[in-house]
Image: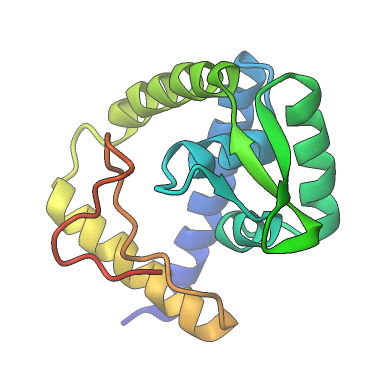
Length: 164
């Protein structure tokens, strides 16, 4: 394996994808962090989730997430509710307006990614990306997300999927 070339290409891919996403989010007047929160909440089988769960899934610091949630709440896209299990804690829920915003941002993103992936073997590309994610998670100690699969119905867990 040519680890040096692979590392260089991954670095370039990461930067190109960041640029691609930044342009996409500008078109939708969102930030990458805001879109990530909307995506995570829209695809969560739970109606409400803790900020720490969100932070872990989207890889954002607690301070950064607090600012992101405040912006989303100000736009009416999320609501924060008291956590019945912890009187001091708060849980986050997607609003109907947040679902609408997510659907528009995500549908456009998927259409744009289709243009990028047009000549790829989907199964081989997905397997390679899952393997790379697993490798980086192993090295960084991050929780596993390589099993993630987009499901149009977030309450349906795919057959054979491992739980988080």
